[in-house]
Length: 109
Image (cartoon, rainbow, N blue to C red; front, side, top):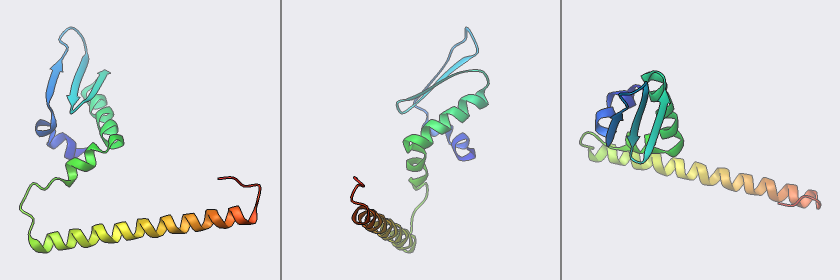
């Protein structure tokens, strides 16, 4: 949440505030948040929407500084390890489901 609030100026495309009432409408790259209440409620709702859509992960992934070659190697190794772990988990789950299907012929996937 702190990261989002610090960088709110960089991420916001347009911001419009309804002067007639306590309704605030903020647009984030196609995401709109409309909350009647406090700014904290609007920020909380906006963060939940950004997290669920994957936008927060994309923002955090952006490099705000120069990435050295050694940092690139470390990041590449971590990404490869994550990918291998994910593939291993997928294989294990598939094998478990196949074993269940073979043991119980009534089981349909």
